[in-house]
Length: 414
Image (cartoon, rainbow, N blue to C red):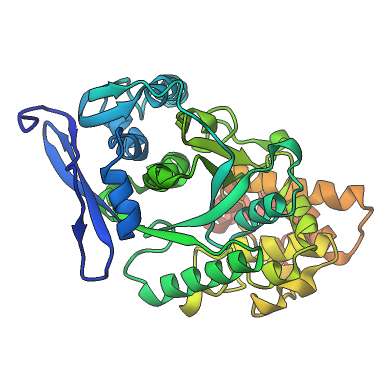
């Protein structure tokens, strides 16, 4: 009945068993000139619970909300959707359309049926987004060790989205990431890790900028919410920036993250009260977890190992250097030594990256650290201005001007 609708989410009621033993759920994303099939693969028990749930449209609506805003207009959803999710998404879309008026457009969601879930019971059972990174490790450790105060949630399982930061084609890397995540969670007493495979990144490849800048949390929360009918009422999503250096607008921040929630599946942004270096300091209490951190996404090695050379790897080493614990990384990094050139050559390509190094330097100054590498971070923030640096590589005249104003001694990296 929905085939003639210009924009719709067509959601079959059942999944189909795949050769890998997982069950595939599909959603056809249909507009007036496009039609794409998005799929997610999960365990049989979780699939059956989703099939029996009263609001089968919740997960797909959440997962594809940015793609719908990219198109704009009315979207018909041929599945029931929860009332509390629809209410929250109205506010969520208003915020992002205000921030990105040229990229995103108003959208009207019209589900087959609206399920009034406003009085449904809630509890503190939780999933934690967990791929083995520093933010995820901090949140998992913080909640399982009771360090989140009255906000502590009862983590029952971890959740890993496969095919997002690591493509599905890199099978050995994904296997390593999955095995490493299982070992880390098990050390915290969490025996279950759900791995949900998804083709979102591949199917919307030409809009990949949406993922990096906007849709990452919505997609993760959408995938994780396939598990809500299995009894998980909260999703802990580790934050990437502290309150005092937030990048706004951004796809994940405390203003809008909670608006991806519904009554029985609360999206809980965790850790905004801590900088990345402060998280590293807290993680000193979990040496096993630190020794298995997976932070590298630019050059992931076979088995999911870190390359040790990309910006994220270097920054992580510096985070732990600042709290005197870089030795804990020896199990997951090829080396924890960084030369002056390694640090000074880091490309601060985005404002959020610059903020990350500013908070690192702030931490160092508060602790009165004066090691040579701290001076290198100061140099990085003072002289590595992306636009000017780019011009200096291109134009000889500008290079001369750079030397005149900033000094020859600062031109060559030591």
